[in-house]
Image (cartoon, rainbow, N blue to C red; front, side, top):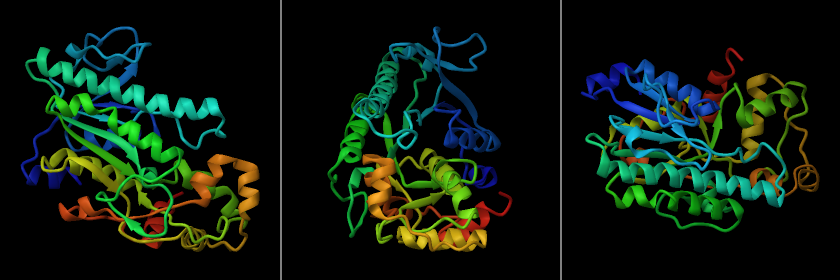
Length: 317
């Protein structure tokens, strides 16, 4: 959503705290929010509650936030958490993935709940990152009305979202953005795939029939702004493009966008050998996910098709 569209709709500038502001999504979101006329206050790891110029809000070593430091903050967008695909999944890494999400979200939610009592102008909205891993693997299309699936990621997302309970119970409007694979040439899954595909070594993973729920970075950022602006949106929101694509279709579209062949499949056994459990859960399994809530509320995707999205994203990459 552009600044012009926001102001035309009477959307007042907000003071928004953002955790994970230095990450791939956080950097782009910060730029977009500021371009729309909002003030962005990063949540950072630091020893004090807030600096004298109100340039940031601190989360201490015990992952606590002083409730008083949220005075005058209208909303919090919580994006921070250990990267799911950054490292091979050992038992210790899986525990780190879980705890970084649950503890961080609980810290934000608890501070927001306490701020309702101690602040004259407390934050009233929590937009919290989540993931389509909630649904587990499957071949039928799911949406926000569907139940939780099975597996490590489904368990993580359930505990992650439940960690915001204290904010919800305190009357804070809470939105869980269940992101699909966010496509950006600057990093993430697409950034990692560009080199092998440019060398003609790209192709489907396993049988390629697994669902590939994706969203262009611009639409991912737009969904955050949209949920901030629409007070009727609460609870789970799938942030995925409306197209229903398989992993094979993604590989073919990426090869076409790069003018390279994409016929070099990586067999499932090799994916498991190289990536272990991570490869099975993230690369060989998938979901078909529909963005029902966003569409019912009138969100318009700027990049609704895979071919169009990749062409735009890679135009200057």
